[in-house]
Length: 421
Image (cartoon, rainbow, N blue to C red; front, side, top):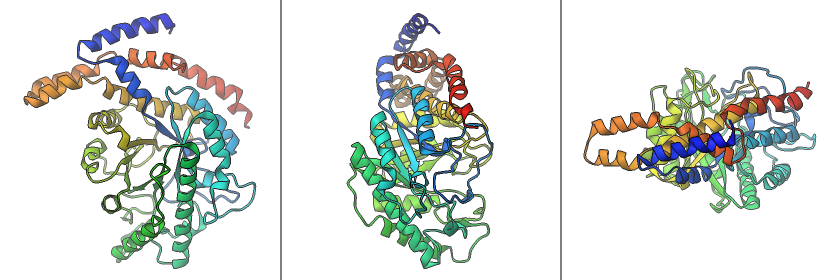
């Protein structure tokens, strides 16, 4: 689309939204200040760069073998740069502990440190990208039995406690070096295929382990801790130690963030409704934006009803400083950079819908209990020209508009990914 057409369409859209009391310029200014954390594991199918890699475990599966997967930190960073180049705004990058640069040496996870992520910090600083972090509690011989921080084997549990402590130190170093707090997500896949007798014992060990891990205090200007619950996983269908109830109680009593993953609930649960329910009790929320198809399948995010409702609620609660947005999907069946682009841009479109919502009129209808007016306004908002506002935003940020994204991703595939045979 030509620039002249984009600007003309935006002028008409701005006028149309003004009829509803919506300032599109203000909406775009707000959208630019909402960062999304892209996840490293989409770029290489959760492989990581350890010298001795174990098969995926912990209920994680990646399907597909699309050509061009990143094989080294340098390739992954190049791919991430391409993704950032087609996504408007400034965003973040989330790393797993297994993505360090270990110089071809075997460095076990209880021995990792900030020195293994110096290259990532330098890259982030150069590209003006903030970093987030995750401990890696899967794909390791000492996670094969299904229990890590809750293991009854003290040797195994001590190993993972040390890993978690070192992961926090790495995250704090990233936050300190880059001048913005690193959000570290603590997720462990602990659980079992069938129901254990001593559920309480498992959860008591997990609680004790977490308390020891979090005993060291870091400045919130450097590190923000979050804990993530899950409903079930492959191999942990009957019992998950870190359930939602466990972690919500833990986050509330320890005054840390709680992670809400869209794929970690019953299919009929609405994650959008949970945001206002938990924010009064915890310092903040980390959202893992994903798309479950029948189960926690981590499909690439699209602008479906779940994402739209989630993004509307993010805007409506008005606490953007306490809500951190990260992506969590992995698809090896399609172009991986394209997956990053589609997932991030779809999430941004959802946020834009929220920022363009005729909020004042809706609140007025709410205030007088005019259910009809509220319902009709919500329906009218769905067909307002948000697409023209989005194209204008992309053009202003010098990234491809929707009509130009496919050619750009295909160009990168021809010139870069195809050479990784």
